[in-house]
Amino acid sequence: MTIRLTVAQALVRFLAVQYSERDGERRRLIGATWGIFGHGNVAGIGQALVEYAGVMPYHQGRNEQSMVHAAVGYARQSGRLATHAVTTSIGPGATNLVTGAALATVNHLPVLLLPGDVFATRPADPVLQQLEVPYAGDVSVNDTLRPVSRYFDRITRPEALVPAALQAMRVLTDPVETGAVTLALPQDVQAEAYDWPEEFFAERVWTVRRPGADPVELARAARAVRVARRPLVVAGGGVHHSRAEAALAAFASATGIPVASTQAGKGSLRYDHPQDVGGIGHTGTATADELARTADLVIGVGTRFTDFTTASGTLFRHPEARFVHLNIAPYDAHKLAALPLVADARTGLEELTGALAAYRADGAYVDEYTRGKERWERRVDACFAAEPTARPTQPQVIGALDALVDESDIVVNAAGSLPGDLHKLWRARSADQYHLEYGYSCMGYEIPAALGVKLAAPERNVWALVGDGTYLMMPTELVTAVQEGIAIKVLLVQNHGYASIGGLSESVGGERFGTAYRFRNEEGAYSGAPLPVDLAANAASLGMRVLRAGTAGELRAALAEARAADTPTCVYVETETSDTVSGAPEAQAWWDVPVAATATRTPAVTAREQYERHVSTRRRHL
Image 1 (spheres, rainbow, N blue to C red):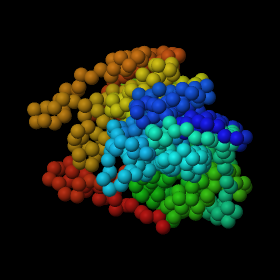
Image 2 (image 1 turned 90 degrees about the vertical axis):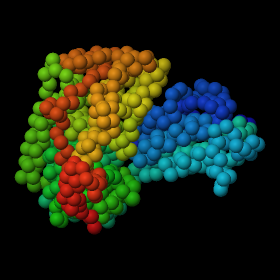
Image 3 (image 1 turned 135 degrees about the horizontal axis):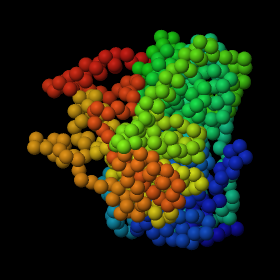
């Protein structure tokens, strides 16, 4: 039997009956579709969404990139068992997807992209918004999505949708391959009718696998742990993706091995777990980084070992340092010449715990990192302490929120100076409270991602922590929050510029050039008065309820009021940024940002001397 539908109608019906399943939990794979319509999708996917409004929920976005961010936020909060689709017109609508697609793929988070494309039949060539490529007639702007997609296909004939759609679902649910998946849809093909086999619309369940470790690899890993004197676990985002937090806690408690976390892995253990020693790397804690410098065995769990985590290859300094890496992706498991343990994080941790029965880290080592953990907690307390009548520093803003929330709250952040402060200072109270996108560190991610997180967890308080720089990149989805009644909380921090890059610029001899939001002075530099920009008024103009806080005391009251609100609410605060006011602890490990090899200005010359001292300590672990 066949059913006559357009390609777009068939795709929407197909997506509505796809499910994922892991550990007996079954979820609808594509929970909704985000869309902005133009001549590339309005009569195809747009019409199909009207036709099947009862089975495919729709969300109206304001920016194509931010729609992908919302879908990614939903996917992460759903444990990668569910995601959203995003549809756009051809041309600029499609190219606006590229940044969001890259973010999804870098972070191994599933999202389905359905950009419109130019006519497959070419009745008129070029059409509006078509980029002509003289050397290749089959190339369109959608081809920019190929390098940032884990799967890409262009549906130039109706019957080609069947294998392409099935492959797309396979990739979205594959814990190794998942990321952005793109099905480019020429606008004429979308509206073309075809007789589809009924079987195409049958419910399908895609199993998310939990492969175990190879016995030989498991035995090697266990031996490496048993002979180590100073082992350290580095927990990455794979712990969360696998929902392996309980397995990690059991492993750490049984063995006494301390656990440091990457940005993506923070919250793998609660902050008050005895073995949790905080963030690691350039934005990590002094405790974790010192343990890393002296570790003779580093056990990675679901991490990509990025340059922030390894301090650009300078962190793991023990002369006999070795690595074991538990990762479901062989590509990552072999990094740093590690003994690979290719397996699902939860399954692998359970197996490794069993293989290490009766093993326990040396008591003196446990006492050492326990004292270090206590010292760092006192530093956090000092950073959070604030005079109620004074303007707060950024760490004090974080401290005010930290003191208010409980384990049900979720904080979302991605870019600027906030990620570094949060990684060092935030006290994660639950496995999914700390939602930091730092694989791509994309400015503008926070607000739309918070929408996605809130859609996935409507009963919880979701906070988008946003600096002025990232706010100006992408505030548009505040309108969506207001329109849909999605009660996110936005904590908007005004520090008059790109604070993170300003500090980095100063440290590498760039003299904070072009990083301040200020008027030009008489010499033309941006060092005049701060710009008279009222971001709180801007947020209010987009429909948000806005609470202004001028002091630390007012901030605490505003945050409490926002947390209790059942409508989208923004708390606006301007931070104290003078050099005489203490901020977060400085970086505890290096990060390689190359400095000018020759210069005449003193800051660059001095920075180069410091750079050469640091780079000389880099190691290649072979």
